[in-house]
Length: 151
Image (tube, rainbow, N blue to C red; front, side):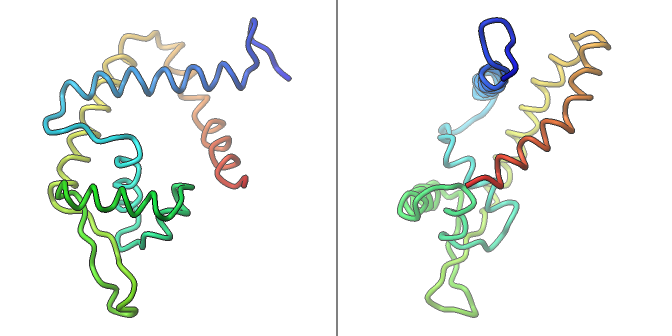
């Protein structure tokens, strides 16, 4: 097991990634209007954006959540005018999820704000540090793919 000081590589990686997400989320939250979305709500919106028309059960599998938990999130996001639940024309018993225009705009605003915050910080790094981050991205993407495949 690789160690970095007192921590394993896995611990240090997770501490760094979670810290980065937390700092960016806090900074972006100050730039966003409207009520804040909880993490699971935002994740569900991203899944629906990537897979328009996805059903609740498939979204639950994608998010590794229980179906009733995703149903609750869907209802919350419908009430917030962020999701639409439409009847599947091929199976009238099934529902398909679609983003509303409000959700699309919110996701776009969130991405622009997040990108701006991170870009500004990257600009403050040395060229060497920026290159190290760039060089690490393919390995981090492979790590993410491996973790996604594991049960």
